[in-house]
Length: 258
Image (tube, rainbow, N blue to C red; front, side, top):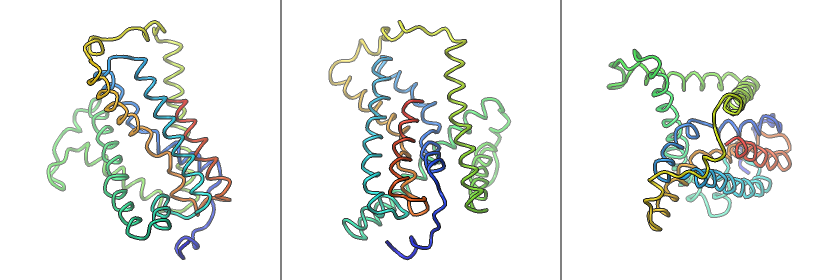
């Protein structure tokens, strides 16, 4: 463990560590990718099976990180695991990929979805702004939102953790409200699971496997973040006990919601 890991204060307890996992997993993906899966597969049963498979794979990853995090409870997650196991070069490569693609790309994808949804209700946000090139007002507002969140987290540990707990509660509550509203007021029917579209009937064995693989990529994108608590392992109270429980419980809750 490096000196930088030792100066971090342990202040994150089980509830907040679990909320960190849930908040990092649930994002725009679950609301925007199912349509692509339906277009490629045309079979609702297969789509649900893929979501269950994605949850199982994420849970397997959480089991692995639970063991690694308990053995090496330092900030950095896979960066630390690779650095301690294979050397600093592998740790650096992992951190570089995470910086460029692992974290930045999902944030950009979430912002893109946010802009598309918001501008559907407020078309005026599509207006151009001569800021950092050709950005719309919606683009600029989304980027400003990121910096606002950064400012909130820079104000202090307690405020940042409390803010994340509240956001997680709103996310889970929103999805539960959608589920309950659909059950109470929707006109769904379990018989719909036996209906398939012409897309599915037109697939052969090769194109079916291709469509399944493509759809599984969408699903795994939506489950990314199941390892979030491992990145702050050295800030978790009793990480050997708390971190595994937070990873497994958080991933399980998201799987059930999805």
